[in-house]
Amino acid sequence: MGDQEKFATPGFDIAALRVEYGVDQGDNHPGRETDLDETWLAEGWEPLLRNWIEHATSAGVTDPNAMVLSTVEITDSGPHPSSRTVLCKGLSPEGVTFYTNYESLKGRQLTRTPYASATFVWQSLGRQVTVRGPVRRVPAEAIEVYWQSRPRGSRLGAWASEQSRPIASRAELDRQLDAVTERFADVDDIPVPPFWGGFQIQPETVEFWQGRRSRMHNRVRVTVEAGNPEVAAMKVERLQP
Image 1 (tube, rainbow, N blue to C red):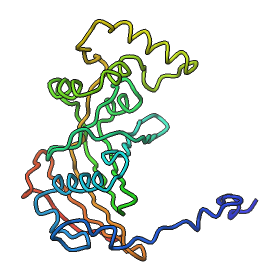
Image 2 (cartoon, rainbow, N blue to C red; image 1 turned 60 degrees about the vertical axis):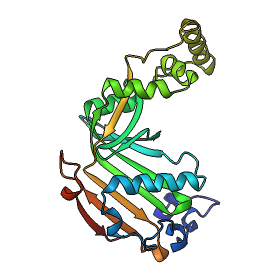
Image 3 (cartoon, rainbow, N blue to C red; image 1 turned 135 degrees about the vertical axis):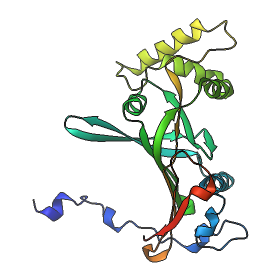
């Protein structure tokens, strides 16, 4: 088998798949130029990210707050990255917040190597944002506030699932949920599990991407000074596509 065959997909020309991005996809920033411009970051990265999430919501994008979270495991054989989709549940000038089981793969990786990258992708809008930086655990008070907003079923699920651990069958998982449901049957206020909580990515860089024709995409990166979320301390620069 030659090199060309090794990298081809038999019966399906995946290499021919491409989208021709147009300015109409990005023309959703009222009162501003069509093309993503550095001036859009005049108030910092957080207002623009929030604006794009809100627009994705109004445009009917499924899970507009979804982001692909990438973490890394450092072993003797080298770094081993992992990625998965999670939901952003908090956004402030200090960072991007999500919640999870601390004993899951991502929870364990972030505890050992507290650094992550998260990418929001709104393909139908031709937009993407990547946030990179160190990670810290969310304070107990903030965890409690978010926990109280979760539906009862989600709280029971958090208690029932030993996230990322192997299990014999779906039936066994259902039995675990049944046991937890019975355990808390007479409990109105289900407590936060001791193994569950939140992480906040504190941005070092935030890159905004907007698709354009001929692959001449718009890329603008914001670099945040460590420990200083003030807009005046941020560096904004355009990147070549």
